[in-house]
Length: 204
Image 1 (cartoon, rainbow, N blue to C red):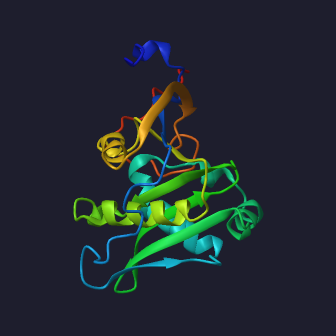
Image 2: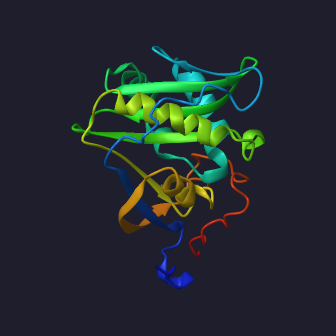
């Protein structure tokens, strides 16, 4: 699906194509690989996670890809979400440094959604993604869902769609979305995701 002409996107907005994917049955090897991608790397289920800790990791991973939706929530709403039994948070660490995030949403039962997934920039390309996704798959399929779902978009890492497809997800449908540029409305700093041009400013 081709992007519209620049003048067709309203001022202050970004055009993105959202691709939805699903996995209809668990992979043959649903158990995470026994070896971490590097010494000192481990994964921890966060039964409780303070809002400040969550947002610090959310920014560390997501600013490069313009993650913004959780930034529109106030602290009380985000705290309640993190405490819900339908939310499962897993954090990858390397010698005490938080380097990766899995957020599962059990609410769309009988499906389970991989709502957020990513690693910090310095760990991209080091084999952490596949190892982390194996943990996400194992955690999700323990609940015996009908299927596992997720979505990615053209603002994400350019290899994200192919990555999920290599690991057993299939495209179900796609849609176009026109969203506020989070850098122009104050949700993210102006220098976030410098590879994505700022939205065309309003005239006047």
